Image (tube, rainbow over all chains, first blue to last red; front, side):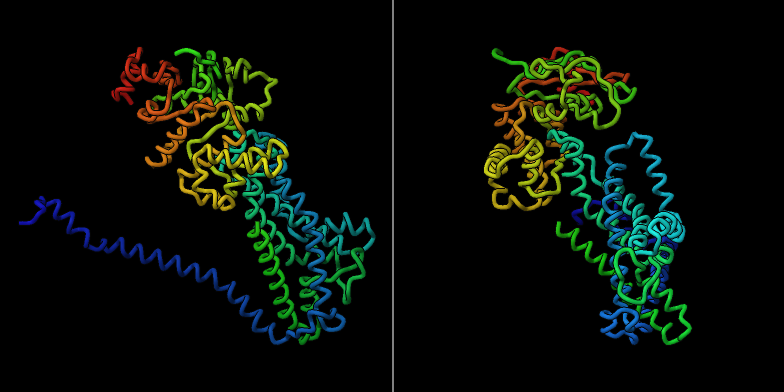
Length: 290
Length: 259
C-alpha cells in the first residue's frame, strides 16, 4: 500500500502536472514568440545594413594619411578637427546650463508654475527642426559677428543639445529613490547638500548617458552648420572663421560632379561613425570611473 | 519610577496631510534615556506621529500641525526653528535600510561632513566609535571603503543606525527598524537598542508586541476608530500596558483579540 492515501481528485491533480498545455495556449505562445523575434530581427536589419553598406563601400577608399591632411590635400583632417571643435563648443555651452536646469526642474521647483513653462518650452525646443535652429544661430551670431564661424556652429549645436541634456538630467534625478532624500534630510542635510552630495552623485551615470546622446546627435547635424560654420577646404583660421565639419563634408562630396569624389561619402561616413562611437565610449568610461 | 527627565513633551498634537486629518489630540511625555515603544494596528498613525518629531513628514507634501512638540522645553514648530539643526538633535532610522550608494566609510561620514569641516583624524575616530556603537565595527573594519550596498540587510540597517549615531543626536527615532530583517538580525538590533539607551533617548515604532516588551521601558498604544483618525489610547510603563492595561481596547490588542 502506498504511503499516500490520495483521493481521486488529489491523484488527478498530481497526474496533471505532467500534461502539456492545451493546444491553443501552446500555439499562442509560439506565435507571440516568433512575432517578437521576427520584429526584433526586422528592426535590426536597417541598422546592420547601414553598417554593412558603409563599411563595404567606404573601407576601400580609406587611406591613413587622410587623417592627417586637410581636404585641399585630399584628407579629412580639417573636417574631423572642425567637428570635434564645434561639438566641444556646443558641449561647453550646453552641459552646464542643461544639467543645472535639469537639477532645478527635478529638485527645486516641483510646485512652482515657472517650472511648467521651462519644461514646456524645453520640450518644444526638442522638436524644433535643426534647420530652424541653424537659421536662428545665423540670425543671432553670424549677422552679429559678420561672418561664418566655428563659434556660430558651436552655438547652433548647443541649442540642439540643450533640451536633450535638460530632459535626461531631470529624468535621471527623478529615478533616485525618495528614501535617499529622506536619509540625508534626517541627518540634517539642507536641500542643496542633499541634491548635490547624494542625488546628483547617484544620478551621474544617467546624466552622462544624456550628455553622450546629445553629443552623438550634435556630431551628426548638418543643417545647422550649413548656415553658421559653412565650410573650408583647409585648416581653420581660428574660432571666428568658416570651419569644416564631417556632415557638411559628406553633403559637399555628394554634390560634387565627379563620381570618384562621390564615392568618398562612404569613407567619410565611417570616420563620422567612429567619432560618435568614440564620444559615447569616452563618456561611459568617465561615468564608470566615478 | 523616579528621576525621570522629560526629553520630548507632546501637547495635544493633531496632524493633517493636506485636508486629511491623520492623527488627533496626542499628548505624551518621552523620557530621557528611556526606550518608548509605539504600538498599534496598521494605519493608526504611529509612523505619522514619529515623523512629526523630527519634522521629516514635511518632505512628504503639504502638511499641517496643531498643538506643540517640545524638545527640552523648546517648541519645535516655532517658526524660528532651524530644521537642519533640529534633525541633527533628533536622528532617525527608517523602516527599510536606506544606505547611500557610497562606501561604508562615506555613509557614516556624510552627516559629519555636511555639518562642517572636520579633520581626517577626528573623522576616523567618529566613524570608528559610531560603527562600534552600532555593533558593526568588527564586521566591516577591513572593508570600510567598499560599497555599503554589498552588505546584508541587517548590516545595512545597523549601518544606518551608525550613520545616525555619528552626528551625536540626543534622541533616536526608529520607524519599524526590524520589519525588513530576519530574526537574527532583529535580535542584534534589539541588543543594540538595549545598549544605546544609556546614551540616547529612543522612540521605536513596532508591529511586534514581543519586541515592544523586550526593548522598551514605556509603551504608547495607538488606535483608530470609525473616523480613521489615529489616536493615542493609552500610555504607561511597558509592564503595566501589557499586564494591566486600563483601557479595554489596549487589553484586546495586547492579548491578541484585535487587529
